[in-house]
Amino acid sequence: MTQREPNSDQPGLGGGSDAAAPRIGEGQVVIRPARAGELPAVRRLIGLYPDELVQDELPRISSFFVAESDGSIIGCCALQVYSRRLAEVRSLAIHPDFRGKGLAAQLVDACRRRGIDRRVRQLFAVTSEPGFFEGCGFTVHTGWKTAVFANLHPDT
Image 1: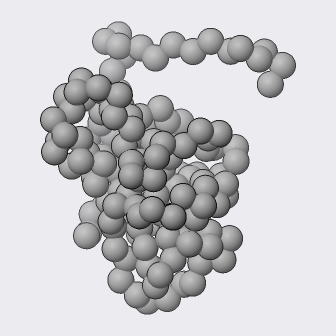
Image 2: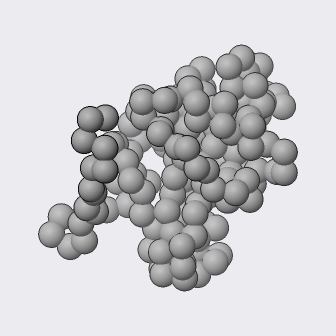
């Protein structure tokens, strides 16, 4: 898959079956649905970004797509479907050694296509990098719908 990755230097947009030390090679990158047993690799990859991706609870592995190169998972992204109306694109991470290659945009596109296949009406993402998602076809809506947050632990 070839696709431009907007703002590819964003934290978290950069995995492997051993996320701490993926095998880096010239092999082809494949974007595919994650398989049973790959959640530990996905967790390690997301763990590379503790400040950006605070994710105690992850979706089921069947919700994820992964980017794989030379047998290592180097990227991940999940589509968490809440209803026919709404699904969230989340848990997007690319191993730092593979950032800037368009993989994040390809993973988001795989989630978008799954949403279309499942007839979901809207996707959303909670992000600190709205420009990246705008480059993937998302729109920042001001005055339309607003995400609201309640800080339950003011000390943290």
